[in-house]
View 1 (cartoon, rainbow, N blue to C red):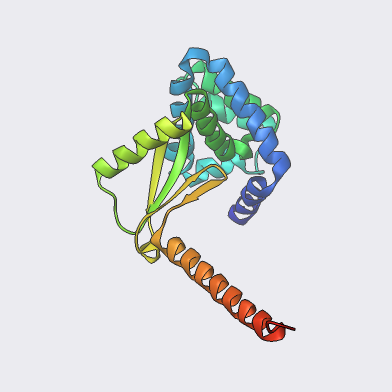
View 2: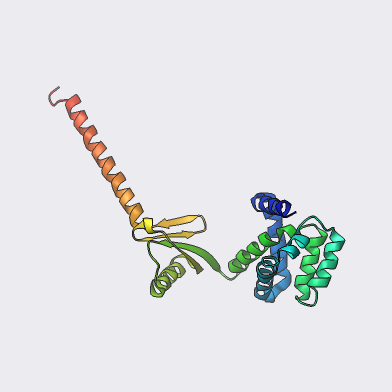
Amino acid sequence: MDMELKTKIRSVYEDPRAQSIAKVYAIAYLDAAGQNSAAASEELASFVDDVLGMQSEFDQLLRGTSLGHEEKLRLIDRVVSGRATPLFTSFLKVLARHDRLSLLPGIQRLVEVESERRAGQRRVSVTSAAVLGSATLESIRAALRSTLSIEPILETRVDATLVGGLVVRVGDTVYDGSLKTQVKQLRARLRERCLNEIQRGRDRFSHPEGN
């Protein structure tokens, strides 16, 4: 059963249609939460990470295929009701009735992304050759606020092969200021210049003056 569940989850993450369905549920959940959307997002994240993530047997029962809809609804009543908010309990029941509980981790990620978007926040990946200090991170954050008019959530990573400089990724856009890339670009320019010089020399020999 464990292998069956893992296979199903993997296909859900890779299936664009499943991702579209998960997004519909994520937006509906936040809309229903209204002004309490931040708390609703935290409750969902806690359930996915701390409950499902730490209790594999319960996770398999809730999101696997061994139980039918009605059995899962009774399981939610027995385990979740009274411990979670009415909104979250109702949300789980809706997912159970429509056989969408397997989408919970994907829904949770999309709820997080949508919550950040509504708050004007964007996740920004910052890769550097060494660990960045708090002052440097704050200056990067300020520059992003000023340039892109967003409230950045920095996700840092160290890549020693960069040698120096930064690679900043915002969505699908990459701002590459690493020394590694600058050296590569310099080599390409030098190579192009050398090829141009060689070609001009060939042209002079092919067309001597006076001919």
